Amino acid sequence: MTKVSPSVLACDLSRLLDEVKSIEKAGADMVHLDVMDGMFVTNITFGLPVIASLRKNTEMFFDVHLMIDKPERYISRFIDAGADLVTFHYEACDDPSAALDIIRTRGKKAGISVKPGTPVDVVYPLLDKCDLVLIMTVEPGYGGQAFIPEMLDKIKELKAEINRLDLNVDIQVDGGINEYTGKLSREAGANNLVAGSYVFKAPDRKGAIDSLR
Ligand code: DX5
Ligand code: ZN
Image 1 (cartoon, rainbow, N blue to C red):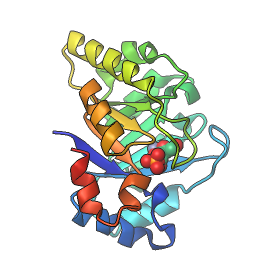
Image 2: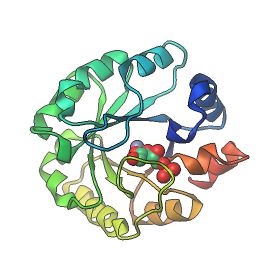
Image 3: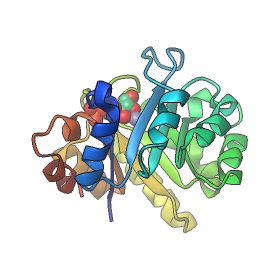
């Protein structure tokens, strides 16, 4: 079953808790929280205190996407703040294997992500330590960009490798996901779809979430 993780980057952030409750009611499997540091990406969003404060008010599964340099410095603190799944960028991390170990040792789901220009095979040696691989389908940093179709081949390659190794690793896609690109991603092998604009700007959020499955 495909999971849907709406990204709050596209919501009304002044009403963050209400927006999270709205997608929970609409049937989202988890909520995608994009943390950006102005270094790994040019944008800056929110961080530990916002997530910790949200955690006190909802039971939703927190899918935390760290777009920060040297994420290993902060992983434990994001788990303290309430992350259930922590995904960091391969490109940003000096020792991705150790970072994945930190997450798993804390009993949380561990994810690793690659930007569009990074070949997916860099994560192959790490797959047995991952619960999820996030294939970015836009350059990270901003919502509302167009899906890069060349990423479909990356999804297919990764899916084939996961099958070859007989592992249980989810494939998440993030960036420009809508009903159409979501279907292409599912057909390529993705089973976890992040969608910001498509869900939060929809008049019928439940309909938008359902259409992604
Ligand atoms: C972009 C973020 C995404 C973003 C997706 O760097 O990682 O999660 O919110 O937004 P949409 O779905 O609007 O492309
Ligand atoms: Zn994201």
